[in-house]
Length: 143
Image (tube, rainbow, N blue to C red; front, side):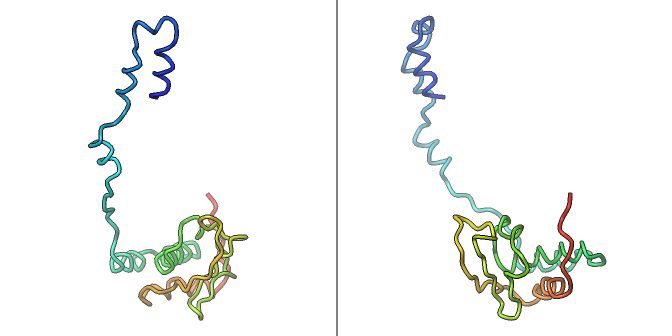
């Protein structure tokens, strides 16, 4: 926006109305910069709250069990949502408690491949994730 006003100040018909110093209006003050860059703590649920939420979720249909499994998997692994959406069952080893994120098949940040000894949260969530994974391939989400 500032660059536009600098350009506009030099155009015929605007030279008398807009000066180059008017573009300084778009420069934030030091205080405004510090406020914009200040880190704010984001509220996050505790593991106990997440565990209760997962247990409260219905689990009668395959879709409902899949939804519970996705929430439990996200908490157990800490993976990003795009990675979770693109991961395949072959990347998850329940017995070894590890997730292999192969960048050729999983949408990882900066396309990095790595093995994550990730299933490290309380074991009260593990059955919610492990049961559907070991049972059958559940249908994909279709909206």
